[in-house]
Length: 380
Ligand SMILES: C=C(O[C@@H]1C=C(C(=O)O)C=C[C@H]1O)C(=O)O
Image 1 (cartoon, helix red, strand yellow):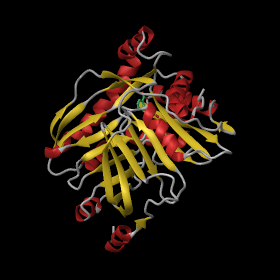
Image 2 (cartoon, protein in one colour):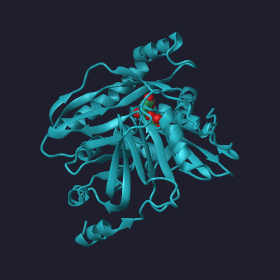
Image 3 (cartoon, helix red, strand yellow):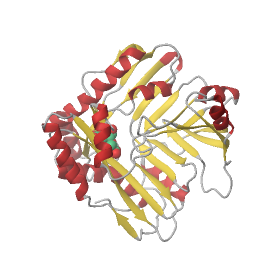
């Protein structure tokens, strides 16, 4: 990149948070902390991000698109606040009711089933091993949604997730979600962890009951889901190997839950070489086969071919890091682009040879249901 472009980007300021704006530009909760941007945001590139953060005694925050060839959208805020996460605790239903949408598109998606069937046929032909196919659901509103209330419900319903809301530049939309998946986190000394999830099942009507436990055990024993999961871990391990001094990936996944789903997850830990940042680590494995597929290039091509929408930041990364490069990047999942008159929800599912179109359609309906519940709309 030329110096001229770099300087131009560095000097470009986003508008400051003002009372006309319904909500902060960037909010994210990780563990027990919530981070909110304040003041004007300075757009930075990946190359200039840490230098600018150091100069402004600040941090870097933002989004990385799903498509690894597209540039990240990163900012250094003039200042930021870190607070104890207000809603950390037990999930509740949220306190806000929203108007019923005037129209909802995408509840039934025959094209999605068709794409799954087609991808399975190609996998049986030996063309590739896994692809994550996604679909959208759009709710239109005559009466406007209150953006801050939407986020409030989200955080109340998902107190253990990586919850985020990011104002999309040059748009009236906010990208909001409650991701269960950590792509990369680093701490001092290069220690990192990543927690890929792959293999999912819908929880019972009464999470925590016997049926729910049996669904979890069944997922753990499912050959299809274990194979789907192993594909992800193998890929991440081989991509991280050249960048790490230590790398530990347990051989057997663990079960984890969200209020809606069971997932298979593996906590991979280790130590990065040299002075690599959390974003360097995330970039090295993104997009993992948990959101893309294997081999990656064929999966990327199939996603472009089968999906009838541009993923943009869905399936990308959201996060922040300090001026030393330490921080957390989560996968942009269980999310929606929300503006006062429209909400577009996104969800995908890993397709492997044993996949069935109807059950993958149902799995995406469950995943869409995470944000559907926030708005009080049914996704099936
Ligand atoms: C693609 C999504 O989720 C991803 C796919 C999963 C799967 O296929 O089992 C599980 C968790 C995520 O890595 C989504 O939520 O939209």
